[in-house]
Structure formats: C-alpha cells, structure tokens
Length: 244
Image (cartoon, rainbow, N blue to C red):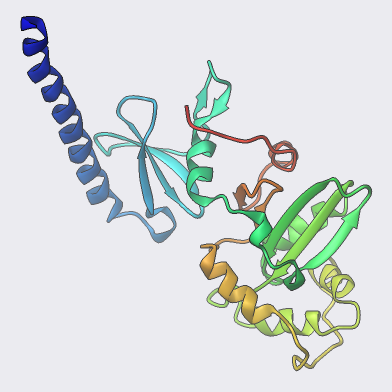
C-alpha cells in the first residue's frame, strides 16, 4: 500500500505535466498560426504519435509543426510498423463525409466502363485545375463520376453564370466536357431553367469546400486539389484509414 501511496502523486504529476505541456505547445502553435497566410491557417490542431509533432489541418490539407513552432512539414508522415499514412488519417478524421448524404440529382453523372470506382467531384468550370482534371478523366476507365458544378466567385466571377448555362443545355454533360477540355463556350445563353447550381453553392459551404477540384471517393474520403496519377489511383480504390 505504501508503494501505491507514493506512486499516486507521481502519476498525477505526470498527467498534469503532460496536459500543461500540450497546452503550452498549443499556445505557441496558435500564436505562430496567426502569422500564416489564409490557406495555411488551421481549423484543427492534433497531437500525433510522434512526440513533439503536431498536425495542423484545414480543408486544403494537413501539415505538421514542431512543438517550438519553428518548422512546418508538408507531405506524408508514414508509420512504418502499421504501414499507415498518419497525415492522411488525421486529415480524413476531420474532413471525410458520408457520401450517401450527397444529393446526386444535383450532379452530372458519367459512367465509364464497368463504373466500379465511384467518385464525387466538386468543380468550377473556370478553374484551370478542374480543366486539367477533366482531361485526365478521359484517359481513365471503369469509373462512375458524379460532378457537382459550382463556382468560386471570388476567383472566377463569371463561373456561376457559365455553370448555369451548361446545366440548362440540352446535353449538359457533353457541354460541360467540351467547355472544360476544348474551351468551347455553351450555345445556351439562358439560365432560367431549373438548375441546382445555387444549391451546390450552399452545399460546398456546408462541406467546407474552398479549393477545386475537391473529390470524394466511395468511402467519403476527401482529396483537395490535384494529386499525382499514382496517388489518385490509390485514392479511387480506398481503404479505411485510422490513426493508431
């Protein structure tokens, strides 16, 4: 019993010490983050399995910072023993969605081959990265692609009108692809048809989408922006991720 009596305050001190250390680190990181540009400002700060390394996340991605707030690390942090991607696991913890809740009637649907790989794409018609992404789709097979058109109006002021014109066209998917790949403007000039573009604008706010293209796979895992072909192939054949 004496040993237990001695150990109890030691354990309490260790727990309190750990909490104080985390609070101190968090305070330093928050102070440093105030100086970050908008695209780096974190919405979440997480401890990682690596002592003294913290994960800072926003909808654009997750990056790492040391406890002294001197270094930012952008890229994958891999757990060799568990063969897992710590960076991605933390990002998906905060930004993955339930794809069953997506209103598919607000999207263009394209089935390629057997359609077994399902993805959900949020794209702005005037976004250069979306145009490159759409071109890449033409080389892929065995996919079902749901594209939710919307507009980043602060970057592309006319994209909202363009998206509505495309939706109101007789063959909207065909016109969408022609516009993004060939820069062929839609012949349709009216935006008076019943279209979901405004609803998609609201949906992107709800899902915290601020970069295009933003893509979700069949498990609801998120990919913001363009990735390499190898990373995209891995993304569309997803595995559940967890932080060990």
